[in-house]
Length: 63
Image (cartoon, rainbow, N blue to C red; front, side):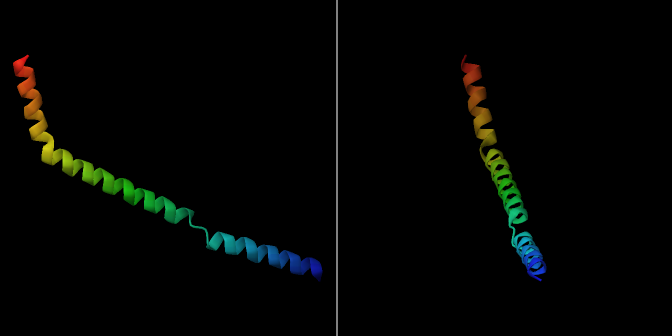
């Protein structure tokens, strides 16, 4: 009887750990952060890209 109780207890603890695991949520959060950083980078490069290009073109012409 004690052996069955111990096995049941080990099963419940193992299943509870599996259910409450947050590994999947962490990967989703990292994916969202990477997507936001990429979108922000593309937006900033789009806004200042022509200004930087013109600055380098001017420097190149001066040389």
